[in-house]
View (spheres, helix red, strand yellow):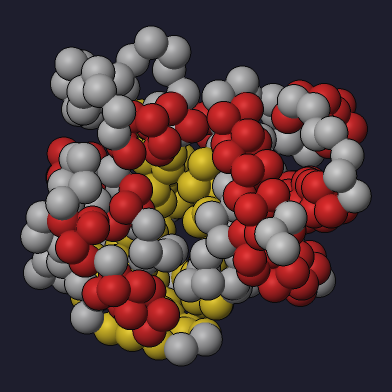
Length: 295
């Protein structure tokens, strides 16, 4: 196997805002040749954690896919002169909390819903392949919104029930910049809660009302993240995909490949086609069929 962080790149799409990006490299696996969540999900699709730096302070958004990645993030921040680190979790899924142990001495901020989901799924997370053991829990919880500062920067945390019930985004109001976690993805959203898609659609519509200039997702194209991220049409692309998929399956229509299904948004440049997302698309179809076609 490749050294765990040998393909990790540190990007700076905006001054004082860093993206720790890994994955989307054909033929490379980090953990094992056998099936595992790290290689077959996060790494294959590309994954980024972020850090906002202001003077000696830093706010880390998600702790990445391994302890080695988390250590690389912390080492980089300390090399910049950071002495105070806080962590924000976007939601409870494994590829966003795997490095929590490295930040166990820091304030780890999350929605109450995230803490509940982590506790509910603790055994499954700690015995996963690879395991996240011990699972370090958040130690500061909030319900819907939380305002913070990082140096001179205003930072807001907001609950959006998209992708998972405990979606938590970071909003930088002065820059009109959204750190989206898994609420938005390129090439398409992963439907993890198929019975909640009506809620996800409504929440995407709510998000679209914000004066967003640029978006930095957890799963997206490396080059686009490096050069400032996505426009708000990423929200439209993700919402449109869910709406069309729901309509097609409900009507019993055949759903083709992702490349065909999202052709309009791909052609517009709102999203970029990435072939491994075909597996996500097939999973989405099966999950939606299980919910919509059950008697």
